[in-house]
Image (tube, rainbow, N blue to C red; front, side, top):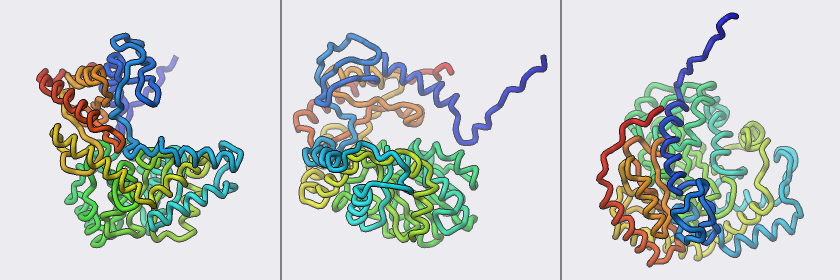
Amino acid sequence: MTERETITPAHRFRNNDKLIGIGNEFWDLSEQNGLAGIVADYDGRLLHTAAGHEFLAEGHEFVNFSCCSYLDLDSHPKVIEGGIEALRRYGVLDHCIARSRVQIPAMLELEHSLAELFGAQAVTCSIAASTATFGLLPLIASGHLGNGTRPLMIFDKNAHVSMANLKPVCADETEVVTSPHHDLDFIEDACRKYARVAYVCDGSDSLGGYAPVKQLAELQDKYGLLVYYDDSHSLSAYGERGVGYVRSHSPVLDERTIVVMTLNKAFGTSGAAIVLDGYDKHTLRVIERFGGALNYSQLLNTPAVGAGLASAEIHRTSELTDLQNGLYTNIALFDSLIHTDQAGSTFPIRLVPMSDATVIEAGRKVFEAGFYVSPVFFPIVARGTAGLRVMMRAGQAEEQVRGLCAVLAEVGAERTAPLPTEPTR
């Protein structure tokens, strides 16, 4: 029998052997310690954990400090009622046909509402910003979204996995490289060399901090750089009427700036919004028809559209400002008690650094004390930079924030264990 060939992967843009071989050990430890696979009711009462451990009894109450609903709009009565009203109005849960063929009018109503809110063109899609990214980045790579020139695609080293996963796909259309985190010199050198460059990054990082929007705008003006931002973590939580960090700060709001934002976080509903400026109807149709899951996947379901319309209306009122200020008050209180590299900003995420060896045990002690914060480790963060990720919300009570900080100070004093040796792959 002829010996069959095996395949040696190129690993040019991804390496699942490394990703899973190292990262899965931390996930297993998280689950074994009751920090992953948790089943709980909305009010934070433990029902059981996936691993079935009994170090915490069923019914254990905890405050969730690992939730992206920064303004608590996902439970706002008007948002809930908006979803119910739309479902009653149209009498169907899902409109199961591609939007390029037939769509319910509420979908267009939501896009018109978001367009007015942002002062731009808005396209919605189902699930999350990752769906939008899956549809848009290959069109940028081929030059069909842009000025017609295939760009050098620069992915920021810290770009969220929803963007980084598109490197191999984009590389089938154009040249793809990875830059150090927000390295403006790297980007400018590429702009001098290539006729067209597109930079892909987070506008608001999932581990805290914002992109250098104004400095990137200078490169946009000087070289025609196209910047693709995922600004999901700042939508609603930042800016007048909650337009987010990028659209609050970028002086370049035209076809050179593309912003995607999930509606699943501070906006409090479902799906995602693509925010565009200066694109003609023909290009919008190309996005709609050839943007992958933007067309052929299921659309936003009817209650999600109704909830989105209700949330958008809240964004037009002073209530949004009150919610933002409540969030900022809690962030400032946390910063006064626990120091992190993100201290002093309005960004709602704080990363309390721990060693790889201590982060799981620290997370477990915090959970036992009645607070849930998520341990983050490779590949979520670079190796050796693990920590407990804390997410602040407007609705958290002062005593809850103070209680969490007291526990974090206690476990932080114990993080003296040495770093582990490299996990077995």
